[in-house]
Length: 618
Image (cartoon, rainbow, N blue to C red; front, side, top):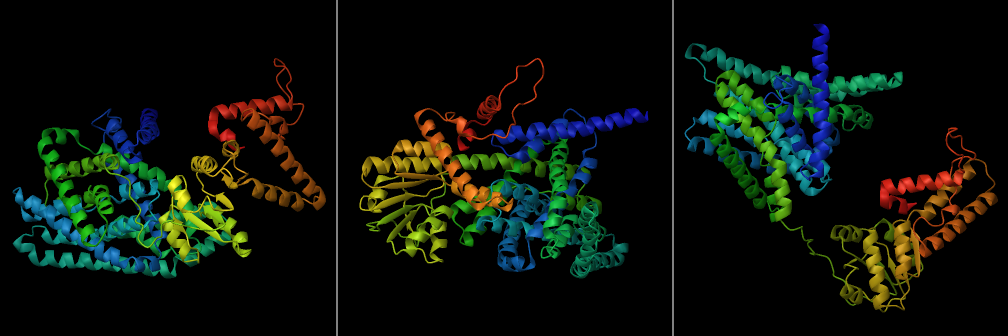
């Protein structure tokens, strides 16, 4: 029997992992994101799908630790000084959004005939956006550090903090029998005091105990002990908040903030990250399992109506607040769609309301279904928004457009490569004109004393306006290979007598640039890699003259190989490459012995088939 139980548990573990491994890549390939993949996987293997799991709540309680660890890592990135810098967004933008959305959603409940207390709890729960979903979306899109991403993070932080007063309000709204009224109010004030005391105690421990503890553990040089200590801090702080009646996630976030300026911050983040990723995926799968399809089927009209009305009213509130505080239309619309769903903290609020008698079991199940369906719809809504809205147009306010420039050298593209290229020219007093099409970079460069004009180098009218026809040389320093080739082709077709020097992203781009007729091209990593290799040889004790000779030999061989590739194809000239396969190479007796050259060519062919264009970059 024990073996059967163990086997069944192993089947569940395998099913859980397989569901995530199969669904997430599939949904990401379809452009729907990993979160929807996890949620769908949970529905499939949950009690209302294939019934691999019969009790989703058990998995959900364990998987909530993923959200806890996620907020701990967010806290590590939020130094107190940074939080203080975001105070206006957190306590201004965040508080206003929560208040407006809570009023709108409570009004929806009252208008549909529900009591004020139930309407408030239902609406306030939906106001608490899913931190896990929004943070995951921002992380996948690389927008966590952008201004609009920071505003969303500030709102999420305020919402996470709002769970504390909301839980207190649930306790106050709970029906109290007249005979127990005195003791009931006393208990509520006691609970609030315990919560405040827990926060004060955690702050004290974080400031005065955690850093000395980690110093002692670091001196022991036991990596596994440091990992265990990191988990202890996260789970211990979460447990302390939970026992005091507050949010586990809030405790983990507060612990992360207190350790954000510690010298051990990066070590803690590296130790917790693997657990965070796995458990956060499990959390979304468990949320999908928790969707009671029976309740949805029995009340589908009510649930569908409330999902649509709640999401629409919340999105309206978010949009109005964003526009009121001077955000652009596109940013306000995107924030409204991304944050229109309910979140995981709603489950905590609804459970508390169920425990004190504000909600009954059926109402809790219906509200939970509404939250989950809104979370499922969010990635779909974002995908639709991306398709129906045009891309953001850059504001050119405060930026000069290229017109009638007269520099003797025109630099197109002022990223890291163009910035370095400009230095020897400017130090020699050469008159340089610079154009770029990245407004933020143009504005940032102005702070360092550079005058950059806005212009797209692929357009002939911009090239004329930038003085390309009058320049003594045009330098193509853009970082996109296809753009560099297009600029080179247009320059040589329109201004054939002007020397064109170009930055090549890789070997394939260099060949295209040469065929386009540029006067000079350089692969962006070629010379730095040669210097690096030469420094390595000198560090190994080689004679500097011998090193210089070897480096020059590499340049000669590379140039010869490039000439053969221009005349032939990307595979030509491989004889000039020095491989690291020794000769002779032991092979099975059933196969003929092949030379190192043949094996190297075979490896190159296999690499070309597997990676396609990557072979061009060698």
